[in-house]
Length: 508
Ligand SMILES: Cc1ncc(COP(=O)(O)O)c(C=O)c1O
Image (cartoon, rainbow, N blue to C red):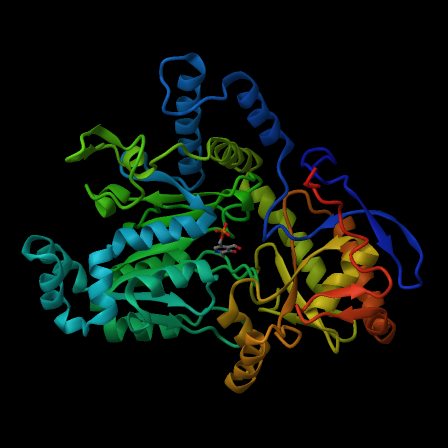
């Protein structure tokens, strides 16, 4: 990608390493955990620092320059995030939400299924919901709720990150959720989605699906899924946490049936720390005049002790309190960075790295890769694997300790999907879940994930491949050199946590 060494913070980080022979040294850190959190763009950092130096203030203050500049900056960031997903500023809203895409998806689930409806849906037989609603909330609200209750179902998939699973289960109850299965190679089973919609489509309110899987990098055909959802009168939300930095997103396409209704984004997965979440879509129609979010400062026109009048402006009303201002601004700047870089270049760069990693890791004896073959499906930015006979936690620990390669392991907050990819049976699952009750996590299954970003290079792939090659070859020595802890973590014998960074807070 031609990212210079200083274009992102932390690329020049030197980490201590200890080889299998006990030799200590230092290596440039290879950061392959971008699917969890990307490194921060130095351009974004510089711009945010400039903002903080010249204009740091509260967004609700309009009496001085910095306060006004802050409001302008937040609105600029909102527009930049919208432009990243090609929103229609006349019809769509960009709402900054709480923690990452999790905040955005929880917000949307609350907006689509208000608390009164949730109570009914979670306790009632769907056919009786309207009657129950009336008993609980009174006639006027019940009429609206009855309308909503006619479509009490959410369709999501077994591939989802928990953040696109649990908000829906919490909203409507498990018995109102339908889960689309995956095929053995990890791609979504579209025939299963079609079966579900053919059977119960008239009761489905929303289809919630990831744009890109955080486990395999599989890209879902979101516009085809949108058409299927719309054909039965449902809406579609795309969890784009893992997509936004890797592939272009078009909220609207030429055929409105294939357009998306909502997308959820995570700033910290697109080169902007601060964990800002954003939800983009036709929120005016969804949220209406209701106050879904928090109440408090900034969201009201007037307050007395008897009553308050919320603002009409939805983003002002729904973002009560002082927002995460640097996080919002950083997210907007990162959205501009991605647009300016261009997705053609981003996708070509990542495709090269992913294809090369898959082919080189796949050639190492004893390495098992997960997800569809590259020849079948061009996934985005992620390669997951295991080394036969080596715990996923040990693989990650060894690569960190000996090669300064930073990876993630275990189930990546996508337990149902990882369970399927690994072929874990229900009986096996029950066994390790029972052990976990007693704090024993050593038998929790998982895999190891290498994930790429704008700054990833061929040298990063080389470091990963070198580490995995040594691990697969010297498996017995590695196993003997490490201690497994009940937490599921592994530490090098005689070294412990000595390779860790010193704490930021020393208590003094
Ligand atoms: C596909 C997907 N969806 C949602 C999330 C949740 O994002 P966040 O932790 O930023 O809320 C993640 C995080 O890994 C993810 O990969």
